[in-house]
Length: 218
Image (cartoon, rainbow, N blue to C red; front, side, top):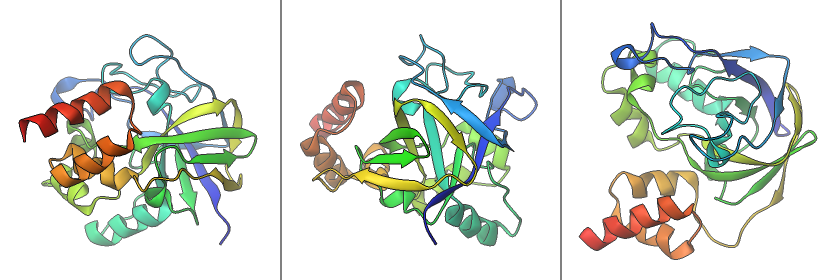
């Protein structure tokens, strides 16, 4: 199967599904197409890179390096089997549900042409309390992290429209070997993974310095 966007998804803020009464936009629903653009710095810009998609926690979500979130339909199918229930496109809070694309094999800095838009992989999604509350599965954060295929965040290099059915082509792959899952392992305490990520110097400055400090602590 050729790589394509199976579904584009947006969410509005809801309080009834979030942890500790917070408002979350994790309930994403399919739409025909979306406009994507660089939302600016985290916490000070437009939040999501997808027009009409709510980012309610600007401290931890959104911004240029987390403008768009992509998950492979193949991963949703895996978890459907594990959990014994159907997971619809958008269930993980992703803006793009793909088919035929190795999302979790993508390298940080890899560039995707999606229709008329150019996106760049910036790193993995890390599961949070709102995601756990939304899924309603015991030990969800641990299970999701241990499985280690979290999907990736993307920045927007060239803005435009993304529609369901758009082809996805990889226009550039960097010369290192740092994938989203490797970064997730580094953030989860794997020191060898952290060394590899730090040596590659592929993360944003705050993320890079966080790992440098972690390595210094041993």
